[in-house]
View 1: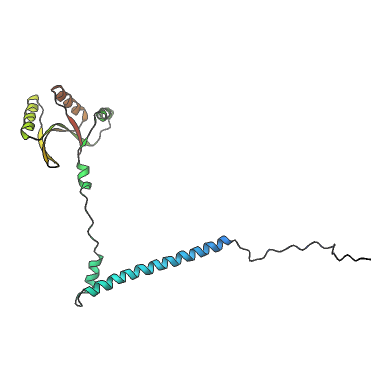
View 2: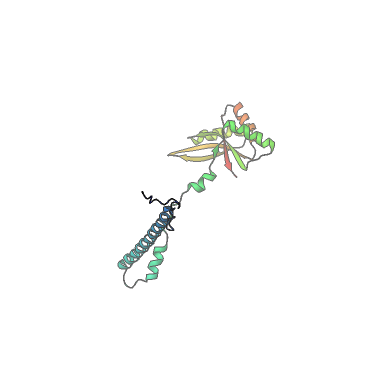
Length: 193
């Protein structure tokens, strides 16, 4: 008779999970942190070597009697930064106010929203001072006081006839309407207070 060697009474053995099974993401994270730390150390090392090279170079070119502290002070002085005039000029610049905006600003003033600016009216700009003076006398005959300002645009000097300053646009609109009746086309500019 044939003998069956298969063990039928026992259940098949289960494989146990090993204790060393960890996710590979942890090792990638640890490795990348080590690489970043080493790169940071190399950066710091290169920064200190360039600073010492500059110090060595400056001490080599200076005579032996020069104080090293004075040399370090000279190096620490920051180079003079460029200065931009438009930061100071631009806030004081005149801005031309378009006609459609004048109407909306007049409505805002009636509601009570007042902008902290002053308005001037430019009645004309002439290359010849005599023409500007003639317009000034014409405005004086109308009962409107004006001044003549000189402005250089490129190589040309202009004589501008200006009225104001006015605090409210409502009065500016009335003056502009009077000028329009007498054939003078005026331009309104806004100047900050």
